[in-house]
Image 1 (cartoon, rainbow, N blue to C red):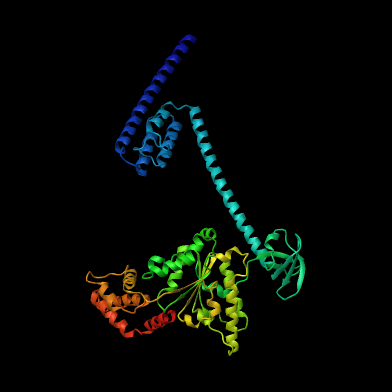
Image 2: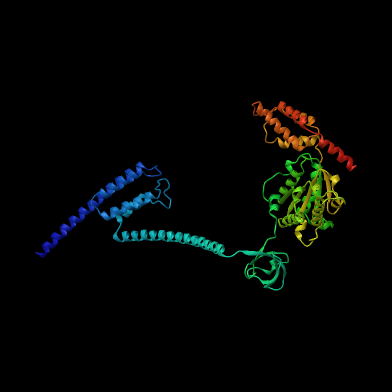
Length: 507
């Protein structure tokens, strides 16, 4: 009896196993059909539409009566794969696994494989959380830095102000003799963070208002007006020697006196001569004296300081001399530098015994300038890196003490351009202008005798205005001739008269 029941149970179990195998084969066949249809439809697609993906996953979940957990997890894997830019073209991408891998995993997946896959997904989630934690810590550090800066600013705003003083003599590592702005002298200490090498006689320092302890070493005092004179810093774009025309010999002399000592000072030490300190440029207005200085500073990549002699003259006694000293101190601080003083005859004119108080103040200003040119601070290495260029229209009115050798190393006359020079200047200023083919600059050169560089630039501008009046976008020859007639009508003979006077004076 027991054997009969055992045989019946075996038969029923075998039938159920066969039915299960048949169901699995049917499920495999149906899923294979769905996969083949899906792959054949989107074999050339870069991205699978979301609706098609949802429909495909739904059909997978309705196939047969297999393990529901396995089919759901297989659907999850497909969705995860397609969410990572599923591409049939690049099957070797690390973000993509072929469908056959998931299909094989679905057919032979066991409960242990499912747990292993879930563990792998948990590890990925843990890595994402760690990455988020890392970003949060970086943000916390940046916030802490900003908070510390805000606390420093708040603390500084609550602290009392500090006074300025001048170092007279450092005695030891901690004791320094200073003189405050009011005049009294004190023996005080310094902070440990302030090095003694910076506390030289004459150095400006900030001291505590209560204990007079030296808190910081300050840069030299410079008048705010000096910053207005500095027109360019190293690295700024500006005119070069390619923008200067008609001055071949003059440019060679200027570059030999200013550029060569800054670019190749060893050759002067090798020969045993001292380089030039300053040069004097004379000539009528508009001949390019300021343009030459700007080209020098841009070529040498140095600071360019330009001022007019009348800007140095101040109202109160002693202010003009102080301004001269601060200008040279600023130039030495930003060396290499080129200092250009235009209209130098306004402060270096000939002195006379019958002068007013204003004339005597101008004389004191000239003496301060001569002191700086003589270079009493010979120990300062930046003295050789500061070159002075003086310009004037009246060289005959300058004081002989200013013109003596050693203070003015070279005197160069920038005269009116000749025919070749005028042609070069016209070519330079017409580079960005539209001209007709009929324009001939040789005729303009013949009719522009006595024109300086500024006049030739105005000539081209006037020709452009004539073309605009005629509603043309191109300048024609008739516009140039009309501009020459207009400028000749308004042109004075000052330049030619100065040229004749300068030639006779030089003779």
